[in-house]
Length: 331
Image (cartoon, rainbow, N blue to C red; front, side):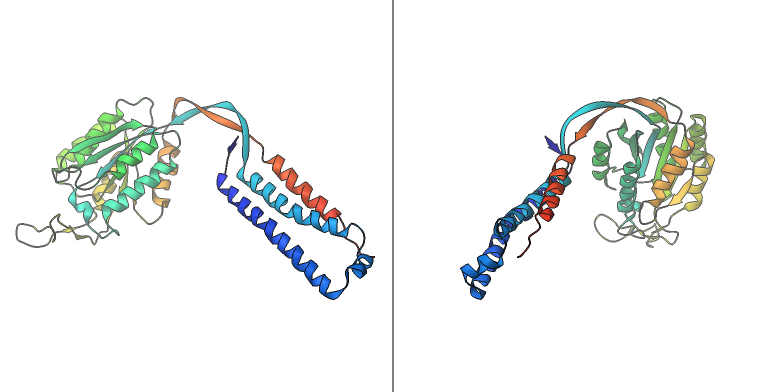
């Protein structure tokens, strides 16, 4: 036997406490009655069998509680295998890990917000294959396409702006790495989820060429912008903030114009990161799964358990009805 919700078994502790409490209440009541009337008079006032009925009612209280506890815990006995087709699209999450993602105009920092958004995004997936590409000056495939979301989230959690030592930002290299990964995927529904502040150190011609290759591969780029247009200084590893050649503090700003252009050029969509998961869930439900063609990814076998909560529930209800039917009456 297994349990669907074993946490509810703690109610058994309450049922166990009900036994001594009932005994104490019965003893206290008997003591109070002895102070009021004699034993002989009490036998004349109380109907025969009343004491036994009250004792039985007291015993039924923990029985009812215990039965309800077992019912809530969801006992299961036996199961059948159920086959279910898996359908989904292929998605590569492309995460900017350049130093500008340490800026704190998105609290607590852009990189922390970006990782939270990707966790929320992965929680919405249903049968899709997802990969992870990290990029700064260069791009690195951290996780190939997989449906093992737990491993994917572990790799994401193990990511920071120090993961790639070569600093800079190459959006064109990131897109090329994602497209290369998607070229190996089956099916027609292929998407890139780019999470970045939009800073790019490549020439405009390089980005235009990468977007052209992305369109030729029939890949749609969906973009999640992190940061604010007002921007914030970029913290350095040893303390202080990044400065330009003139010694002025560099303020990194969210470049929404560039990110929107990337999305529009590939038939995707752009949203800015906001608190909660409405932004990434909207991208997934309305855009990625709503517009791209999902393909079959095999068959999943699920256990269909035989639920037995009805048995303890019937015991609890029966005990309650029996206790109410005892009907304690006086002469």
